[in-house]
Length: 77
Image (tube, helix red, strand yellow):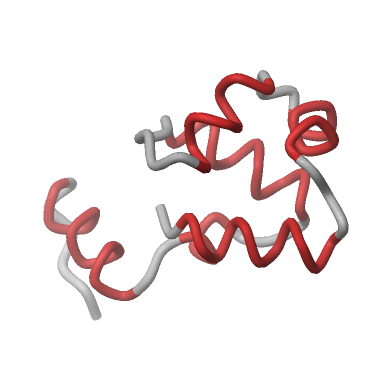
């Protein structure tokens, strides 16, 4: 997950950690851990993306998407 993209989107949306936690149903502690570099479950990323009204893919750069696809054995087009 690209933390910089999450931070940028939060700043643009004027959303702080507590707001995002409330909007997404993800705990403040989990939001804080993610922003500090902890790994996040896909379900958590989906909830954050939905709360911020962006697709889940927004939080990943091309190299991360390639890594995820290779892990689940799907070839890129």
